[in-house]
Image (tube, rainbow, N blue to C red; front, side, top):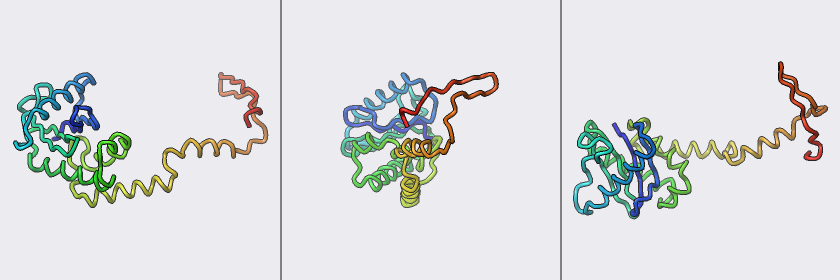
Amino acid sequence: MIHAILVFNNHGKPRLVRFYQRFPEEIQQQIVRETFHLVLKRDDNICNFLEGGSLIGGSDYKLIYRHYATLYFVFCVDSSESELGILDLIQVFVETLDKCFENVCELDLIFHMDKVHYILQEVVMGGMVLETNMNEIVAQIEAQNRLEKSEGGLSAAPARAVSAVKNINLPEIPRNINIGDLNIKVPNLSQFV
């Protein structure tokens, strides 16, 4: 099972943190720092697997990582997961990000965090691998993008709500609203209409 997915830059700034096991926030921050220091001190030409840090379970857990340009992608897994399978999963995740963002970079992870989390949820949910076929993942993301465009996106929701309220045909604006024992006096809003 995957217990955590961490993406941080060369300076240790977390860009994506997803835990599938409950930890208090301060412990999560310590785990990110410890993981960064464990991965950073390793040479580029040695194995991409290492035992988990003391905070996340020690020798029962493995850290499997890949370093791409300025980002480290680290998966913390238990002993039931295949190291090579997780390395392949990291590759699929990064290539999917690359397809969706057209040459993904650190700024894409910062400014499109919601989309990155959506992509991650198409790959891994609840610590279990859902999908490894990149074409299937991209197809689901494109379907989500089409749905958002057809609905006007979340950013258009407040404007649609305001226009819906303005289009309500009330013959008269109520002055008093009575709901059971609750009496609400409505102020004069004609100056705003």
